[in-house]
Image (cartoon, rainbow, N blue to C red; front, side, top):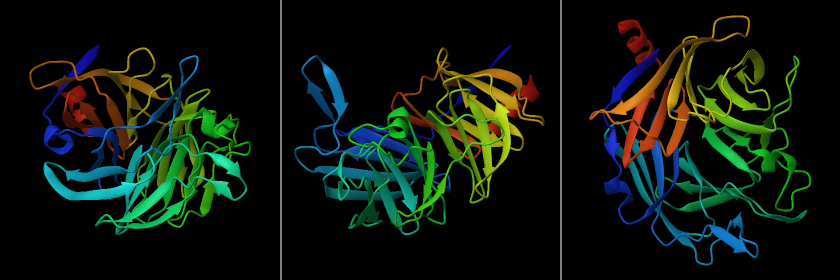
Length: 320
């Protein structure tokens, strides 16, 4: 039986985006939502003969970005980034700093590759650049400054000149200076990561991720595999976790239906409910962007920011 959750917007995005273009949306460890808006025309793609289209890492002209952090309805950060030479696809807060990320990186030689992690002060001053690798699917940083990066297939198997790709393990952790501190290694019959579809850095101790080929949900505790569940949903791009339950955004065939599971023991999740999110007027929420962080999924839909959490889904289930 399908359940319905009616959501009110957290905040309208039109005043933030204005005449610009939203190019990045993510959530920090404290639940603050971060948005990156490009203020100049985009130069993000290369179209080659035969209509092949490739991501462009560096535009012809440096870009000007606006980075805004929103906590509830309050703006907690609003900073201009001037003259950034990389195209930006992701964002995360770091202790007293701000990390902007280009998801692609070209390798041209042992000492000639693009450092696609761009670190700024909270006032918009460029500090340093670090290599995070090509083919980044998502980025989530911890309060301590440790950066977790997951990779899609090109980042795992190599492209853009990388024959020994940085993201070959599919999931990597870095310190704030770009030193690698963790690589995922499968065990207990797990396959290697071919494409890490979703990442949720819940806390300093707990990191969850979900990947192709068999779509297991993995819980790392202190960087060791603690639990494994084989999820009966393929192709989801966001999930939230809380107290033995997980809320998944729908997979390949039904992206905007949400699935609430009890994780239980023995690696066998139990489907509790299928949930459809609706706006206050009863319309179906169709998300253009979705990020799972800790106990909530944060959504961009039709010019508004929304948030749904696991406990709200459980409350709806119990009320019925």
